[in-house]
Image 1 (cartoon, helix red, strand yellow):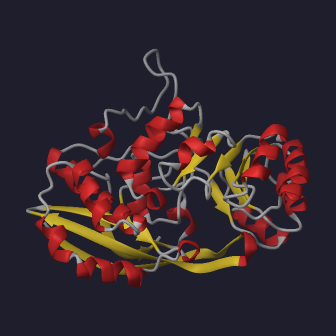
Image 2 (cartoon, rainbow, N blue to C red):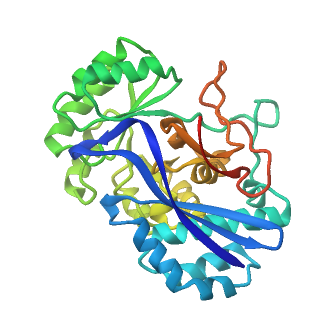
Length: 355
């Protein structure tokens, strides 16, 4: 295989802010390509300050280990992941980018979309043989003054919203948004509440028709989560508390569901195992975005037949795209992801272009 990689920076339409004042105007990522013969497999990993992940650090590791990666014989993507996991034991984001590219390449070699290699089908209609459809993608509203959040919502009509919370005006914010939409709203505190805040806010949010709460408390506040689990009137989903495979069983004691992030868990390969374990523990499964571009979002899309909820709106939040083939329906069923038509990830990489 031949390895190539480069940095990518895509601008957000609006500055993107989550709890504790974390704001960014661009999403910087590393893009990787694995080439073999006439095939190219692409992968992506965003730089995330919260996890001390930088593009520079990932590029340095790739250059240092280039020869080992290029010598690997890709005869099984799972075997490739195990190789990467041992090569980069402390770099799950980098492992994810390469694992993603490996699956993309493998799918093209086998002339199949990745989800079909896993034995799953992407249904587009309910009939006598199929009783469910893939989940609809939400649209995320980052924290802003209430007037600005209303403006963003009105500019982007959508069937489901995820709203970032963790402010002193969370309840007022949702009340204001509710005056402009009756669509489902999910909230994500990104570990920004105290136990006392959560105990007060969750019942109020429930009365406003909020669907679920994601990561209300700090990732290791298990005592507080036990209180919430016993008293909460809304489903609670783990994000920062559920990073790797080992976290799934722990979270089953405190949450109703988990939000799997491909980059945090180190790729598509372990994500498959996490979903399987979550099902045995009666946990609902969401797969979420770290503001990945078309490439990373297409990887999330491969899991749609296995998910209860999905948050893969990175391409919707940005003003530039880096690929074609990933389509969100803007018709009566807006938010629905249209089936991918190509092999592997199902999309084709392009130099970033304005939407």
